[in-house]
Length: 312
Image (tube, rainbow, N blue to C red):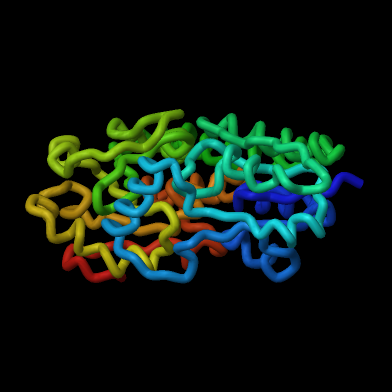
């Protein structure tokens, strides 16, 4: 049996989703809770367990990127004892997770050299294909097709309902960071589209970028979704004033019409196929609440921001 380690939470999630977790040992400190209970954590971050503001986090990671020094490290002795045949890594974002170059350096001294399999999706379709790549590497490709078929059926049901009711796309904006403000990129604009929205400030299949608030004011989204990378709803609430105190905030259509939402990051910036489909279903309930309800298992992952800037 092929043994693997996963150096990114999204791959770990998909391995569990596909019922392939018996192949897995060696994960990151940010992987899903069930994996952390059952598997050895081998990837750590020097910022782990520390509290920083959005601005401080952005500054620390920007400095790390500029210097070429990673904030992540591998516990080599644990990995040596696991001796995986395959390690899943990524190159989509060296800020969010350990990348392939850092992984290659960390495993160079291992007595058994694993195969490194980068998973670096840019689009929603790419994310689906990473599931196939994972299952194929473990000799269980058929598991990926069964997994993806179920997810595609859920997405198709959303589209069918939108067509049946002739729903027009809502003008929306989803933010990946609050200070500085980042638009959304990669697969998230595709999630928005499947959910019945269009985000003209986004960067489909590309990196998210800093945008000035004045651009958001001029665009004037009907629906605004705030989902900072790595932040839960509760963590975002702590810093929501960075947006609500901006001049012109109360003039936004989304604010005036009570259509501002705060959501957990893992439905958007953690690219496992299942969590992204969860994110699409949640977005549909935000964009077209008269036709779609928040799925029961996702109710705790979203909050509406009231006109008074107090969460309901």
